[in-house]
Image (cartoon, rainbow, N blue to C red; front, side, top):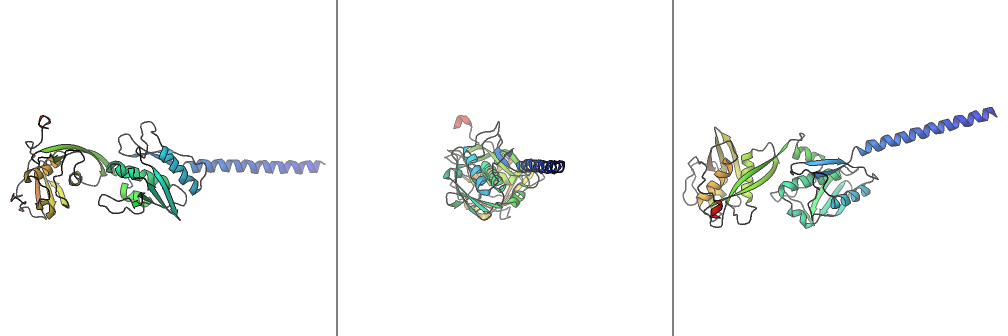
Length: 314
């Protein structure tokens, strides 16, 4: 009898130990798994994405995809951080093709500003790339694949995209506010427009300014000053002079404004932010080129404040 009791006691002890090991192992697994998942927000200044820990109820791909979609579509501000998706933007459906996840947003996605869209795209991709088995994400607006500023399809976003796009350093991007000068309806004056830009730190500010200027104004009543299809072939600052090299489209007068307005739109926009105090403009590398009205570019241009429209003139 004593032998039977000893055997039963030993068995109970083994079962107890095994149960204890099982519970401890499961707890460790839960803690380990929970540390791997995050929800993403945008900080109040719209300069970076912020992550908050997320604990999924299940770890299956289907569950997590649908859970993330529900969270994103109903996400609210978290303290000072904004919801990842702006108001009106909804993730309407998805398609999972093996390890590639295609996400389809409604048409309101196309209204997101370029600066914020970069953050939204990064937050969305990081969210869904956490899911076990998902190695790539494609973003669609309706049936059309998301494109970059040149109209090229972005293609698959994967973990390598973030090294290329953001750099391994968290400070690979910077945020600046530039004053850009466009023209009014008359074409005779320059009008200032503030623009917030989030861009790669390795890019010279002067190039970013020119790229933003070439995109045209965002304020009603402002008009473009750089002809369409103008390419920025080069820009650099040396000895306090900013050297700008445009493609031939710049001299073709694709905008119906005085040449002076066009020139000083470029000059004033650059000198408001650049360390330079003069600008030299060349066409296809030719510093002696002339514009459509015969104006020679063989000059060093200083900022021209006389062309800037004053508030009492508006």
